[in-house]
Amino acid sequence: MKIAMATLEENMETKLDQTFGRAVYFLIHDTETGENKFMINPAKDATGGAGIKSAQTLVDEKVETLIVFRLGTNAVKVLEGGNVKCFRAIEDTAEANLKAFKEGKLTKLEDFHPGYHHAK
Image (cartoon, rainbow, N blue to C red; front, side, top):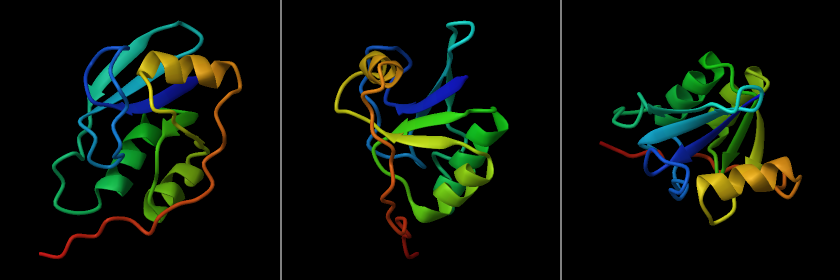
């Protein structure tokens, strides 16, 4: 299984990013191989639709689970279309969130905001 998180830095001791669509990095952890892959979020500087683009990136990477603080409804639609399950992150490191998920301590994310739409 591939598990994704939005992170502030490219290491397992980093805190998770409070944002999703404009997060700088995504961590993708493969539970079968134990590999941790960090990638720059290609949507971080998008002029619009960053959440949708970020969500599509994770679907394209075949992520099955996302650990995140909050999500907008448009991003959720893309993630649901890709069968990605979303869980609420805890205020801790990427490593701690991964451990909490594996131990069944994270709750499913079920409340979504309408998104952050910035007027020009």
